[in-house]
Image (tube, rainbow, N blue to C red):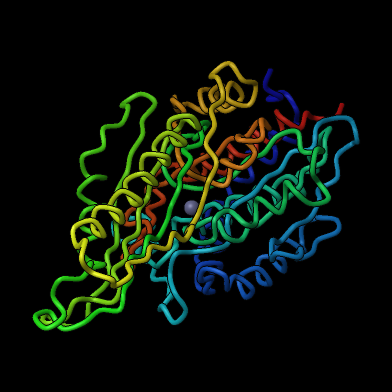
Length: 398
Ligand SMILES: [Zn+2]
């Protein structure tokens, strides 16, 4: 099943190990360019320039800001997407200086985003370079993509555009390289994220007493949500994560708002949880109004969607999952794919085979300013794994 006898591919794998230092340099270089949510342009332009040296056709920035280009195959094989995400969770103005220390012979890179997902971007770049220089000829084309909007409020807008645009219906396999360590994600944890705002006129806490209180309505909603029971399998979760409201201790607030994150691997379970959440926030509104039957003061509620990510599963017997597992075993590390929330959610929910691969090494502190990446004794295994998976899925031309 694996094209390990292909000499060009063997040469590419050897280069990925030999040129491990180059991969790490790219990782640090990419990460020193900021890519805040919705402001990925500078990193996209830089990533496009890096890719331009390695035989990518029609390399461009698409309408939503993804970097995209094609590595041509022989024309006989499925179209395979090889991608990593450009965006970070860090706002504009974050110091993204990358620091490098090599104490004890171990390379450690430090900087916001160094693992998530500069490691993935560097791995994709290294794989493209090695396949180009070793003249690996795949059957299918490989669509190389740096996506925007993977994190948080980005709501997967880059990868959504990819599957809705000119490549709609043409993509055979989707690979995202995202994460450090040795593992793969084959299931899509869906999420529903909302902001709920209760509002009224507000007033003096003593003088205006006797009217519905937006903060109390919010408290009722949260108390109901806190008592939800959810299935352990499929794993389904909920968290009220942010609360806001109020201006002073002696005022009935005019506004109170909370944000909630609900997740599940199962679309049905997530839909059911969503319905209970909606009932809870409506019920809280009614209960707070009913608490003050003599008040003519209005109490309103608004529901805003922060993000909706689709859920989905793939069986372990799916070709793309078996390829990921068997290539990892071939390289000497066993993996058991898990479910998570990544760019692969979009294709998985569409029924298009997709996988998210970790890029080896050891990452710490993802989404924090103290993020670090330690390459360890065998960080090159990540790029090798990705190259093997790409070549196996696209097929190697004879
Ligand atoms: Zn990521």
